[in-house]
Every structure is written in structure tokens, then in C-alpha cells.
Length: 125
Image (tube, rainbow, N blue to C red; front, side, top):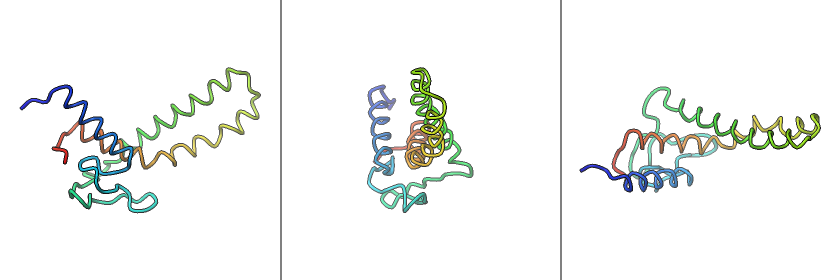
């Protein structure tokens, strides 16, 4: 049976909502992270293997980088255009390239798994 656009969109929303909550995108029941920055190898509920191949998290790193750079640009460019002096601008914005990727790490991994599910579909539970 072919998937309709509405079912594809509904699945995408479900996947990304589960990723936002840092839950398994497939079942939505189990957490993705054990503690700190350690990802579980498998979902404790549906047994889906999170890291499916060597280098799997490269996409998550790319998502993290793009989102962090975009957020930094959204903050820095308006401040620079408004005429803010250079020294306060640097003091305010220099920590951002370190802070944003660290804070967004968990969600970047979760969104990468959700995106992988969209690219390589499996039945959602």
C-alpha cells in the first residue's frame, strides 16, 4: 500500500515530536540517553538499535553544527547591525560557539535518528 502525503507528514511530526522529547523515535516509550552524553545502544522497549553502523552519528554532528551556527548568526548579526561596540559584542557572543553545540547535543542525535527513520522507513510502534 502506497503512503499518502498526509500519512508521511503525520509520521514525520510523530518522529520529530518523539525526538524533541528525547525518546525513541520508533516507539516513543524509552529514553535515548542513559546519563550525561551516553546513548543507549538499543531501545529498552522496542529493541531498535540506535547506532546502526560505524560513523552513524556524523549526520548528528552536521545537524548540531548547522543549528548552532544559525542560532549564533541570528543573535550576532542583529547586534552588530544595531551598532553595538565590538568589545561588548565579543564578550557577549564568544561563548556561544562552545555553549550551543554542547547544549544541543542530545537533540541533534535524536533528530538525526528521526531523520534516518524518514529516509529509511520502518513501521512505527
